Amino acid sequence: MLKTVLAILLALSLSAQASGQPKKSKFLLVSDLHFNPMADPVLVKDLEAAEPARWELILDRTSPNTFSLYKSDTNWWQLKSAMGQFPKTLRHPAFVMVTGDLLAHGFPDTFRAATDDTDQQHFAAFVRKTVQFLALQLQHQFPRREDLHHPWKQ
Image (cartoon, rainbow, N blue to C red):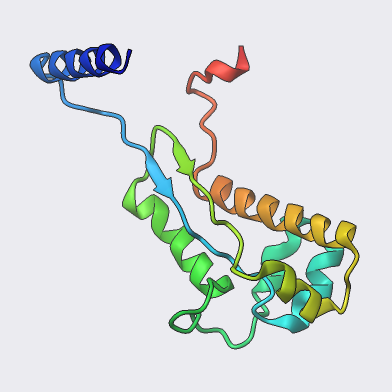
């Protein structure tokens, strides 16, 4: 079975190369963001109370307004810089693949330390908001073009 799959993939690869057509579609791979929205603990209560669409306004108050230190997880300024670089790297990707490691290392402990809250539901809500915020940031960088055909919208 494995040999058959490999043979098919090889044949497809060779036929694509033989066609002489340039490859037009590229995708952007985003991985290991390790975003820490709690890098400025003073803002955590405001983030908890706000919808993810309002987080950018809150995070813009992050102090200090410098990138994360070496061997630290990604703070707001570093994430904002990376997000701004994505479309400069590839303006119109065929798709964006996000492979994981979205949250900072030790996210649960950092949340508890910043909030003195051990309620699992509150933590889960904050995780959801953080992931939603990251998705909104990517959508902001790569707005959906309505003129494209989307197979999932049939």
